[in-house]
Image 1 (cartoon, helix red, strand yellow):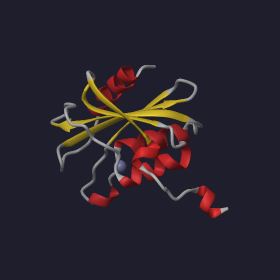
Image 2 (cartoon, rainbow, N blue to C red):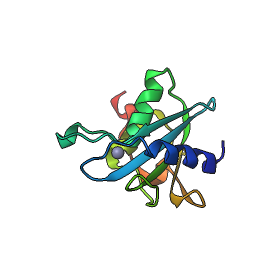
Image 3 (cartoon, rainbow, N blue to C red):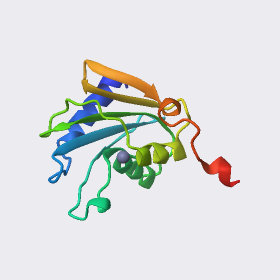
Length: 135
Ligand SMILES: [Zn+2]
């Protein structure tokens, strides 16, 4: 699975985003080490804190299905149901990703399939708090 393919899956998922309040649609595609892809979308709620980001819905779906070993995530975002903005995972999503992913986990974001930037979780969440702190 190339980063373009993963981004395309995120952009396709974005169409199912539920964002009636912000109008900002996000799709995420999470690649498992076995090649399985889970998608997620942002799901807003009239009680704003009850909503959830696309990245976390993808992670939670994968975990619910028995997957915990991930290699990359692609994020497609934009207004009006169309990808066009380079969106980064919010702080909460970075923390959730760090529960399951190493610092070399790849994060792809971009305005289009031809304009994808690549980062690692270690770059976006350095000096993170994790399970090692609780041992
Ligand atoms: Zn988030």
